[in-house]
Amino acid sequence: NFEKDFFRFYKISDLVISRSGAASISELIYFEKPSILVPFKRAKDNHQLKNALFMKNIVKSSSVITEDGLSKSTLLNEILSYLKNDKKKLCLFKENIQKFKTIQKLKNIKDLKDIVIDVSKS
Image: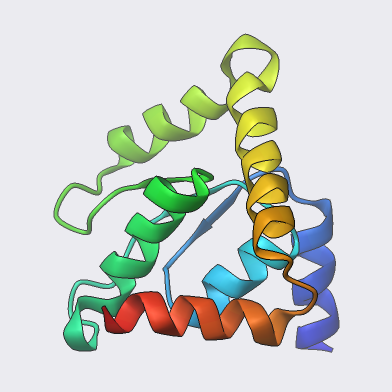
């Protein structure tokens, strides 16, 4: 039941706050969800930070807050930045994911995982 509920929550959410492992990144792209990513700083080879920066700089669909920079106020301010101006940022980030998927011609979540794994190795 967890998996069914988990994906249902992805479908109904407007914004996701998450770590930035390969599976999470793949799901965010698959479900076309803007996100606030908090990379796990002790992840091997710093792959979570690399994945988060991929989403921020390449896909252009996420904000990144490091663990060291995370506080109640920074998270709240970042959430509010998505809700300002009739959710313009949410709409733009979702459009950016759609453009990325079209350009990459990604058809399923396996393809997404392969791309994220490649980026995290570089």
